[in-house]
Amino acid sequence: MNVVFVLAHQDDEIAFASRIRYALERGDRVECVCLTDGASASTAKIRDEESRVVLAKLGAGALIVAPQNRIPDGVLPEHMESGLQFLESVAAHADEVVTLAWEGGHQDHDAAFLIAATFAKQRGIPCLEMPLYNGEHTPGPFFRVMHPVGDGWTARPIQLRERLSDILLTRFYPSQRKSWLGLAPLMLFGRPRELTRVADLRRAAAPPHRGSLLYERRFHYPYARFANHAARFLQPRAVPD
Image (cartoon, rainbow, N blue to C red):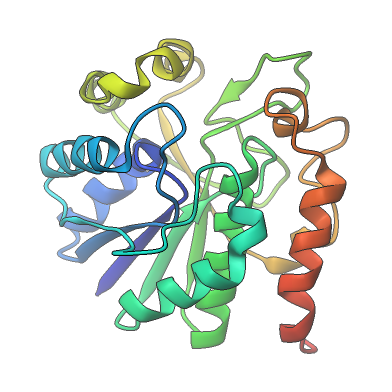
């Protein structure tokens, strides 16, 4: 089986580390597709190489990135049509898709969810979502890591040493050291487990959770702006379920 992991940025593969190992142990072919250049604090070339190192450590295939006209970091919601076209061009062989959760952590993450779930729905293949970080029930700039928003999640226990191994992988992202200094320690909280949920586009009819979203508070990206772009992307494809 061909499993395609859809990332918004280089380093989002950490959210999928346990699932990548699981898929490889199952004998699947694994690929990761990154939808943006990730070049907010570094260059795309540097970030691509960092992700390739981590994926090699996990035993996965190469990271696939757009060869030209790459979507800038932070504005994927404005370019979801282009993101979908790129995914269609490189992942037509996919049998299963795994992507970032609809959780309100980063606007690009939620956009990646919409792109991946739309791609999978059009092809009639499964799509799973996995959490990375979100601001549900937290004030100001604070957040939770790998914390599920909503219901319908399936938990698969993993060994503590696997979670520790995932945390240690963050040292291979020197360009993102500041971000991972905040994220990595929080990965230790809670039981070691992998959380997956079937990606359902109907969730996009409402914000990921009540209250202000983390990307509104931290990245100053209003949900109303996101919802406007999401509607323009989804409405032409809306069909009765």
